[in-house]
Amino acid sequence: MSDGQRILISEIFHSIQGESSFAGWPCAFIRLAGCGHGCNYCDTTYAEKDGVPMTVPEIVEKALAFGAPCVEVTGGEPLLQDGVYSLLEALCNRCEQVLLETGGFLPVHDVDPRVRIILDVKAPSSGVSAENCLENLPLALRSPDRFEFKFVLASREDYLWSKEFIFSHRLAGTCTIIFGAVFGVLEPQLLATWILEDRLPVRMQLQLHKYIWNPDTRGV
Ligand code: SF4
Image 1 (cartoon, helix red, strand yellow):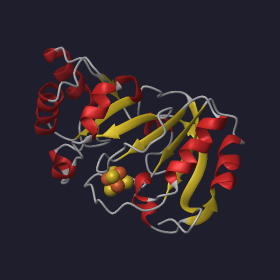
Image 2 (image 1 turned 120 degrees about the horizontal axis):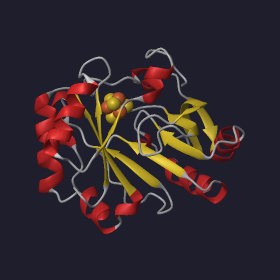
Image 3 (image 1 turned 90 degrees about the vertical axis):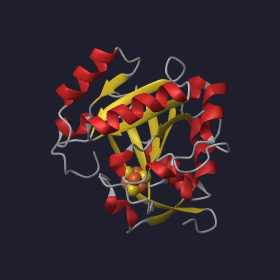
Image 4 (image 1 turned 180 degrees about the vertical axis):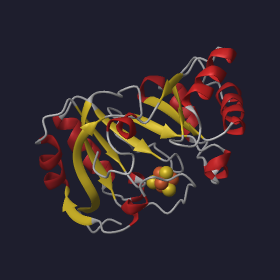
């Protein structure tokens, strides 16, 4: 939760971007504390607690000190804290490439238009697919260059559901679409085979940081 101009921060760190079309780039990450959606495969449950209150200038200075070509605001669920909007604006004023990664449950209308939004669409295995915020879709279709849709899949059922979703909502061929596999649950080779068989217009991605470092390592 925000405290006036302060934002609760779980961690700020320097790593390799691992989960979008920016995968592979050095990136400064700002992880906001708090979420509560309870996705079954959540790998950042530690961000639910122990947040440290920081002002926007403090956060910006710490993140930009890494000198990375991009900065990503993530969580937890970053859009739960009101201060995130002024943080994103301040980052855009100082950095060419600002990314926002959100769980996709909340509207993104008030996000600075200079931000590239990586928006999760939760498939059935997440346990929360009924909570996807569909009102974000028309905005994405009007400004496709601002959006990437990320599906993290744990099963064949997830894959088929996601395939139906991208076509029924006209995202296929319009926005960047990322299909990834839940680490240690869905074999990447299987997912690759399905994508190729169906000739889907999606980018497959693995959680790069989990291959570079131990998958349980924090702050990478
Ligand atoms: S939205 Fe993200 S941070 Fe929140 S529970 Fe789901 S995976 Fe975890």
